[in-house]
Amino acid sequence: MASDPQSKHRMQVFKNKGKDQDEMRRRRNEVTVELRKNKREETLQKRRNVPITDSTDEDDFDRNLSNINLEQLVMEAACDNQDKQLVAVQSARKLLSSDRNPPIDALISSGILPILVRCLENHENPALQFEAAWALTNIASGTSAQTQAVVGAGAVPLFLQLLHSQHQTVCEQAVWALGNIIGDGPALRDYVINLGVVQPLLAFIKPDIPITFLRNVTWVIVNLCRNKDPPPHVQTITEILPALNMLIHHTDINILVDTVWALSYLTDGGNEQIQMVIDSEVVP
Image (cartoon, rainbow, N blue to C red; front, side, top):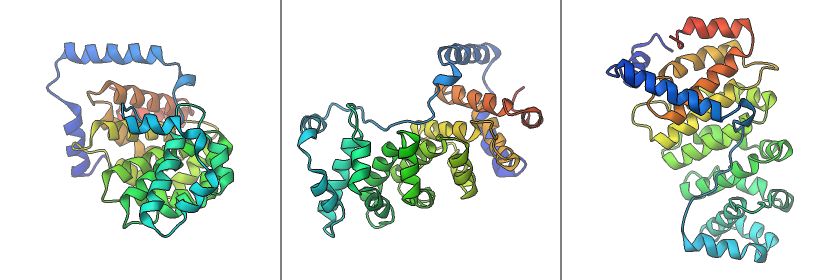
């Protein structure tokens, strides 16, 4: 990947060669401070998507959480009326986005999982795909059993398809969902890798990607590098290292910190992984 002209061009865009030594030193110090604030055990393997909003609609919804009839909600989420279906799926998503103990197990028990997964296939309704993907993201952010429930419902191949959606919000939500699934542990990490997540994920790393989206992509790369029992396959590391070589030159502190964590996880895997990192020249 690093040797082709397009990759070299993308790498140069991220490297910011004009930075002087003082600026580079300042950035290194910032990264060091951030790393000291975050012990490795505290870096998030899974993240729940909770909207930060002052919307009165969201506040009103939170006040009415206890009044929602899950059986009715599931029926409407499965109905043929797309307007009703969207409202129901959005309500499920809002339940799962609540700051107060989201009812993940109750929603799984209600039978809504296969309905949400089917919604991912509705390419004519990207709003429905987005809401369903968001709901599934938050279910997958829970316990290992809850994450496994999302996987068992057949969501992963559909999330991989959504990485190619023409709608950026849908792509980004699919990335987030896959990040939670990959973050569950080495078994699901390798399962998602074997289905082909790496190249579509890395394709998002380009100059015009919104910074919040790139932060999510970088976090997923961290999860791909995480866990050493077993470590990621050599082929996966080979594919990821050129991307880390680009990201390590980014100016955003969050991306820099996550990139350093990814490299830290890789070098934790053993001598072979350490040598691969050295050979990639990602660390000057």
